[in-house]
Length: 144
Image (cartoon, rainbow, N blue to C red; front, side):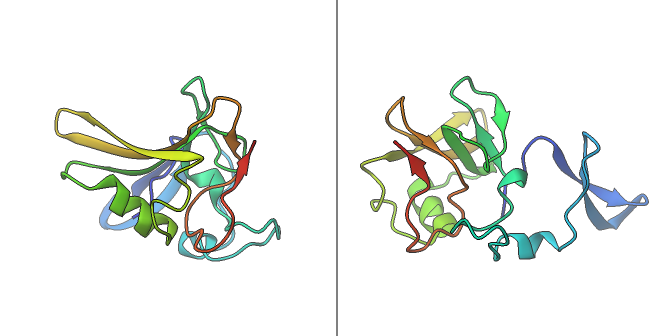
């Protein structure tokens, strides 16, 4: 499961609840490839998977920003279930949650029945510059 940023939403196609499409609330063009393929390619050859502009990242001020821009946190899970955010991080990034523990922390925020898992930089002067999705053995996208 992927968490989309607030500019993107999943809506029924032509009112048919059995078919869904991703729509942009600000009028930007949709990608020319299937969303599932965005998470697997590196078209700009920066060493990180594409699709960061569709993910939910936050600035230090708590504003929604593209994960392709500098950001302090990335939300990688929202739901109602009681979850282990460290395990979700490992699944989302395809790496052990302790790998980057020096630079980032995984946190769980709960409000009523809702749960949010996010990863954030530890040092105020640091920032992430790409999504942590499917990092595997790739270096953490952090700017010190």
